[in-house]
Image (tube, rainbow, N blue to C red; front, side, top):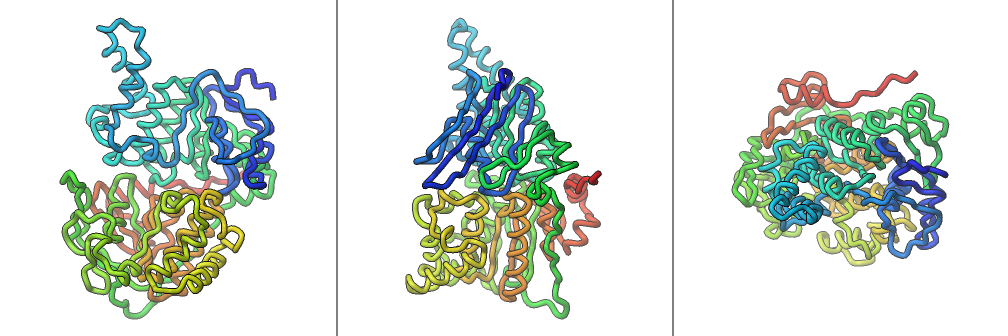
Length: 511
């Protein structure tokens, strides 16, 4: 691969861990001002390939082939930007530190103005207008999209000529996704090359110039985006691009049972005292799925955390079978801990990277149901196997499983508590289309088979919300609309819901 104009490239890259080749002969080029996308199922090798441009590899990896990058920093916008922001420093502090370090040659009396000019340039390029108030906040006071733009501004301040963007639209609503596409397109227009790692096929089609399709560590197809979309040659590419309907939900007829979970007069605050969520009334009945949708920063996760006892600064009540739950997880007894289980969006952070996943899943049955170690291990193995993680995979450490595999393990861990309420926070947002549909089918099956279980599905994705019986729409911390899923999705009443439905991607016509 000659690539004299490439800002980054790999040639015949191989990465082997514990005798397993997770990247197998990948060659790619990132050109200035162009967007190259890597797509594929969870575990296909996208992230490992992308991180190779950063010089980062899994512990103990054997690496072959060649990685070349331009003589400039490589920027990285990770899937979870909060992980690379210092929680104890305001968002603008590091930006100003980086800028001051770059203007040391400027006369002392001009440095402050020169540094500020560089910061403002980076913020403008990262699509962060009017940043003064935002940069005074700490990372936890920013939405995921705002955190992402701060990280992007840091990379631009460092003078990056190539940006590795890892799942930048994961967990984002349709309106925010559109803005992220505009941000990255603006960065590319400045002559910066972008390597986009994504399962979000709509974003890839809207943004990328070239696409490489990966499976089991190999590139099975590559070419211009429109060519691959209009005439996919490889069977796996055709499967990945195929439209697959969300599993149908049939709401049982007859009298409706009493709610398992009910929220009344909920008003949640940050520790600073600022009110961030107001929910007058929500109810979820046995066998029912409630989807909570809205933009990034609308309060969806705060609501989920209140239900699970992870956010205790609120007024009002969360009731289980008509009895108020203690606000804090620490005050809930074993039965109530088991009854309401939470499956996190950042699933990797919820596992110990160094212990076998099977042991971590089994621990739930020991701790919350009093099962013996042998009984718990047997139940965990059977549950994991039923969710598509047979013995060999279940015996691996979390660091050796893909995001999709870990998401199934997290679901198994929650199910081993035998919950009455399962709260799933954006659990499909980091998954490719095929894996996502499989997980939704599993959830639909659980509701069909467990008539004592109800599901609260936190999601930005209206297509995923079609799994639900009912939908509640949040905007700026307020429930602006709720009702049967079909009514909300086909005849929305509130202006915000109308805009959300209108912004949702629709399948493109195939030629």
